[in-house]
Amino acid sequence: MRYFLELAYHGKHYHGWQIQPDVISVQEKITYALSTILQEEINIVGAGRTDAGVHASQMYAHFDTTKELDGNFAYKLNAILPDDIVIYQLIHVEEEAHARFDAVSRSYEYKIWLGRNPFTLDTTWQLNYKNIDIEAMNAAAELLYAYEDFECFSKVKTDVHTFNCSVTHAKWELKDQELTFYISADRFLRNMVRAIVGTLLDIGLGKKSVADFKTIIESKNRSKAGVSVPAKGLFLTEVTYNYI
Image 1: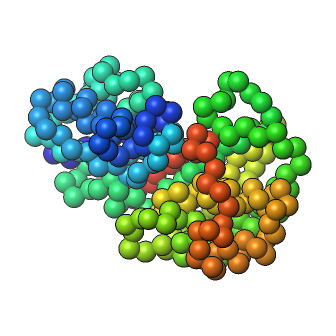
Image 2: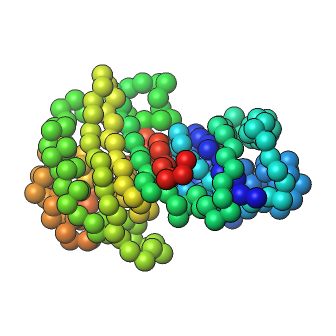
């Protein structure tokens, strides 16, 4: 039988979602918890692969088991998982359902704190800039809708077959001292959101123009784009499916 897990995690102590040698990952912790409770070898597949230090307020993963599980299973998992990983619910799905391939959209938020705040050190990138041109950054962000190839915002060494993504929402919003970038697409490339944020911030600080942003996208050259901003401000916030 196949099940989906809806979960969230604070990424500070993890080297990303995916299991890797000699480092701690979110996938490793959940796999261990599932295998321990079910007393069988369990493999889980996530909706995506967040990088080291990135958080998720909503993530889905699927796994198969020979056992029939009930609504209390999420409680049992949470009892042995670390406090910075939480299972929200267990969902029984069809055998062919797939957490990664069936996702129709994904949304991220990147949070910047304008000033200093000791209580958001792990969840925002803190900057002392006061004069940021948010209007110019939003004008540039709207250009993302007109393109599909985002190779310029992708890590250079990656195993993807295409750099095409369909961006459906991209906008900056300022609330008090927290500046947040919201972006949604059908898929994302590795490092894509953090590279977009770094490039848009260059525009907001007057280092690049909106016209430069267009040129960068069309160049398909990662070296033309801005820096990759720190992982701690990035959150995977929503993954959508047609059947959930």
